[in-house]
Length: 611
Image 1: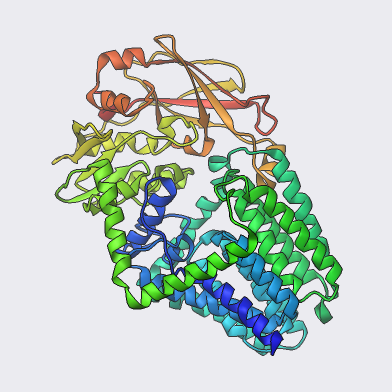
Image 2 (image 1 turned 135 degrees about the vertical axis):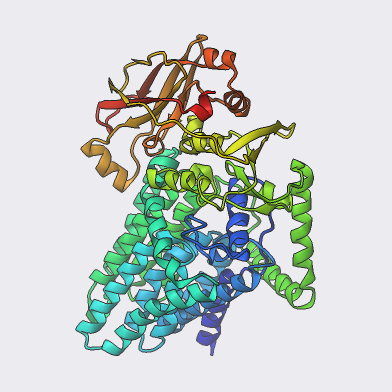
């Protein structure tokens, strides 16, 4: 009886984590903008993979936990399916009572990351399906849901499926292998259709995920305290050893160790490639794993050491971020359950309150940014989609709707081709706001010439945006002249010839062998671009090579929104003052991850930007 009650409490805790009973509301900033945008895209019936290309899929609200009236039912249904999966895991693993109570307390008081909740599921589902006798379909179906929530989970899901199939077939248990693998294969198209997505777009969804995954590290990396990385690696090694030395029945250790190492690798990349609050993902993965594995380990001492290691990693990483002033452990756990009960009560008896809070949040955003009502479709550059959505204008976005994520040539080309299609919006709101100190033209600069060809500058408003309106007739574009190719060396200044009407540039730079390996395992050194202008100014920017394979405007240099307006107006003084005289591509401290030779390719600025 006591054992059942302890396990039931753990199940209830995990179910409460899976169900977004108290969802977030719209806010300002990059993360809040993409969370609202993907929810709005799903609510508007936009097709993922075609009209929307992002790291999240149609079930994104399960990950973002953001409320939207048009996706709340979908979010709750997805959370319920994931909750069923976690309940099935606990049912199959049957953790020891003391371990279940301890895991419940620690998770209710310390765990915060929805990333970790999704990342850990494939390994835990594999553990459950190989140790149990039933429930393979209940364990497998949520894996299909994960794939349509966040595409980067594909490697972990595939590895779990392949491992389970091999082990179960070797045992002669083909029925469970078919149930587990088949439930995932069937769940993906069924859930895709239930989300209102056309079946023939599923392939496009996966094609869009590949460049988003492959280009992430080079484009989005940032540095943090190295001692955090080393500490996490040491604690992760302890957890891995504790798992490896458990006597894992007749299937051997290799399934657990292989999938655990894959999970730890993905958690490491998720936490430390962009080393800011993302580090919480890595620490919470260790915490969740250690808590759930503690209850099924037969060698309790090693499992206890793993739990202590995960707690040390959590304490050193999580407290450095906005949760530092937390109440004591039991008070936090009590607050977790109290908050969930209140949220459930409110949903049952006062469901209208969520809608009221949602519209109030949008109203606050509208008053803050004061965007006008425009007739026809509207898109916004570069990334603050929440500002546009709060204005109640009809959102008509480009496929890669956050400019900072168009970080490979394929992604940049999708946005440029959209501007040439029949689906372009009537109006654009544009503000130059690169992230991480990037060269401004990197973020959708490959679309600027096409944008100027199809749109005219209407006004420059006081809220920091340029208002552009679609031209009644598209300006003719002259064919580009032959490319000028200039060889260069990293760390050495390269003189830029004076062009009659400015230059577009593409950069060909490649990683060294060390950079390719290090970029796969962790992240390569970031490149910097030093720029010297004709008026004597020296500027320095973060440079992302994948965003400059497609030609982007280089000279005259566009540094902010006002400069972009001057470029569109063709102001001679701006062209003269911001003409680029020399550039220097380099790495602070020396470039070991990049080949020393690179090439600058210049073509005259297109007439749409040079007139």
